[in-house]
Image 1: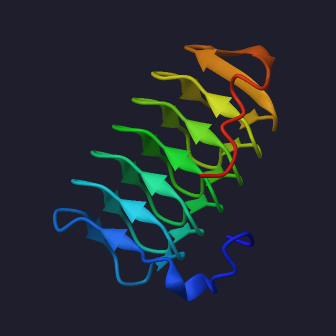
Image 2 (image 1 turned 90 degrees about the horizontal axis):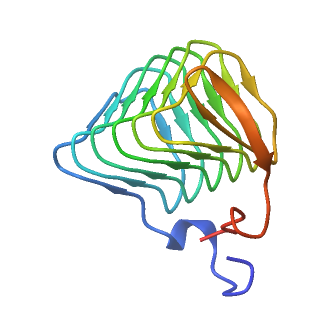
Image 3 (image 1 turned 90 degrees about the vertical axis):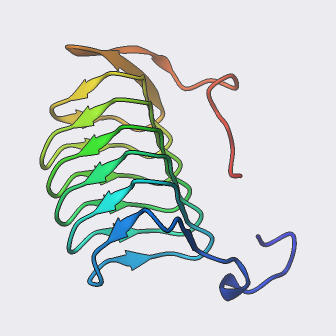
Length: 141
């Protein structure tokens, strides 16, 4: 964004017509909510976040800037996905659990606590696979 020199309001927020978003939620600039996404009251979604189809966000979830939530993810009450984090398809993040900045959670994983930033975690039970590397560092999109 800084490279283009555009103000934040120039990036549209796109919500698919089948997505359900409670009016109390906050959606950042440049955020995209795809079909059949359900966002319950009190959710805060930062700038340039993408939420793929059939994802459910419970009450008071926070997804920070540049986060990516893949399809069919469940984020429990007060769960936090930090900046630049990726949550893979079908993952479940328990209430009050968190995914650290720049972390990657593999598809189908079950997050019961805290995933540290800059690491790749996957499985059920979830376990650390690696540190984030140039292969997993997607960079900002």
